[in-house]
Length: 190
Image (cartoon, rainbow, N blue to C red; front, side, top):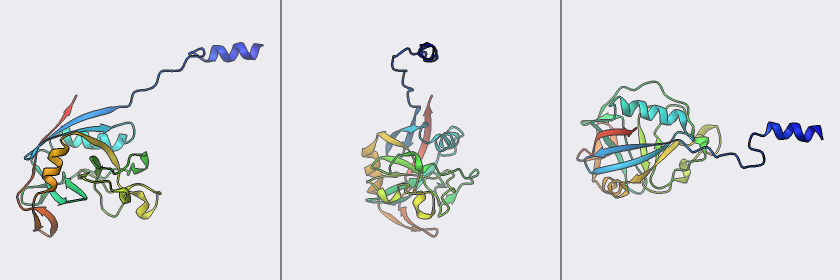
């Protein structure tokens, strides 16, 4: 009898369902030369990645950069080069959080990186199709995958316009838009 009373006192909800915690979603508006893309970033599932992206966004780092890699049926990548393919200096890389359960599906935003799974800095890409082969499968080698940290909630039509631009090779890079596709301004909606 005493054990029952003691356990009842320990449960402050007294048989009721505890309130669920609302996910932490941050809205970001990306004004491009092709139109506006609105993103929702998932700070619950990718806290370090979202914090990193927001720090770059709030500092104005992305303003005036370009989508420097566009591959139809795959993705559009930006956030690291200015017009003329001038690469911007970045902060230290962040830990890969690709094991967060978010998938590289159409309209999701993920961090670009080198072959080192923990090398992402400022560059990101937006998937224009489902890219399951980029998902996390294991914490080793190719299994690390690419960290998804949000999704497009407005502007998929803009994304499709960017995907259609003609590309070329420039400054040692392939799939570079012939005419710059600017990221004019990235604004965090506080």
